[in-house]
Image (tube, rainbow, N blue to C red; front, side):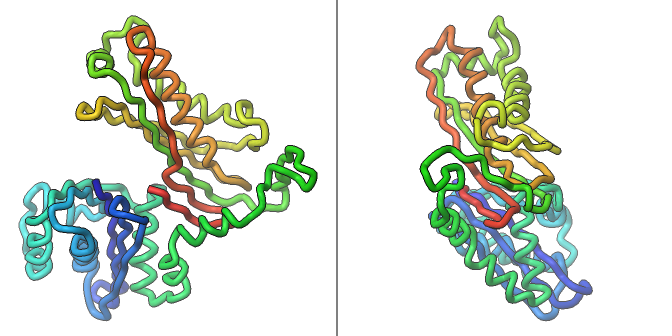
Length: 304
């Protein structure tokens, strides 16, 4: 499954505009973007989706995320096409040869990939070459720099060290993580039917995950205690491979990152699912990984 986040922007409407897209799932994460000297915001919103779809193979299954109600509702609710018919025709051609799922995402609400697409579009619209170059180099360069740095939790003598972050400014930090719990089909059915005597598996796992994020510094010795401003957990049941996917997002306004809190939320939620279901299925398997982080000296990193 390929995931695409798109956005369009325009100064003046009509005026100079830009579009951007973040593409994950068909190889290394990549971004594409472009501009038009005289256009409208709606045309750039459509253009972003057209260009993104054209950049992936035909017959692909893809989910397009956009904060444009104009695009999403036209494609899913058959809104009447009063303008931009040339752009809609281009989009229809690309959709026809792919399986496209459409998802509206609230703009400027902390979704890292939506905000990245927004920055790409505005960078093109404003002609901000420096910021565009930074985004073109993408998250992999930032990731490379992170790997090249020394291990900050170990001092010169090899002893454990809690990093001094006192001189750093407080900035917005956001992290997302994802995990899966694979179980027997019969176990998954019991979860869906809410048939466990202990209670509602997913409701309890969500509470546990949020509590886990809040307790991260108590669980992991060298993590700093952070003033979390938001933690949320969602679940998606996949009957085809008999898994429950867990996604978390954690936010803070602080001196250091919130990645461990996002990972702790997913991990504790997964462990709670295991605990709730182990009486009937002790062979469940769990996995966890970081999806993205935003903010801090290393910049934004998207791992997909």
